[in-house]
Image (cartoon, rainbow, N blue to C red; front, side, top):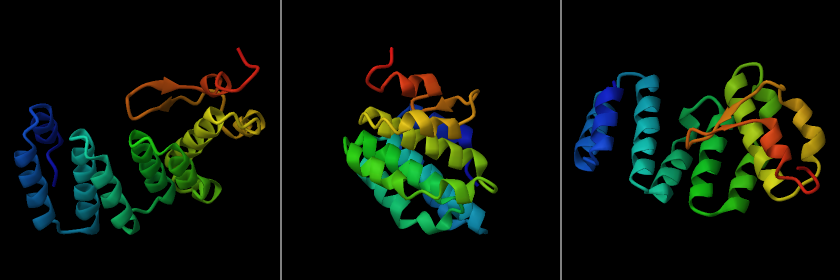
Length: 163
């Protein structure tokens, strides 16, 4: 089990050795597939906090089969690719996400991934986003990995001819 408060304390103090030891302990004592998923998730977060985006990306790719939501995994990969400056790969990571198929079972993850996909398309000036945004609820707010809130209006503002 991961003690999230302890994890955050170690990450804030940049005690990467202590954090790695804690995660190794969680891996070694994992009793269920959920324990393994939690350890992989938090190890990815730790790698990202260290600025080791490529390592985090490789971990997520290597362990993708552990997670039930493909949209969630693909969005995580896209976020890491963006941090690496690989915007086109990030877009490609989301192009094949099964948004509609996962809506009934993983609504939040599928909707977040779809919003991220539309955001990347808008950044590239794709006008199809105007119509496709109807697929996102009007009151939806997307929280980025940097804890910024975005809405459909933010996406529209990226498109040419919108002020």
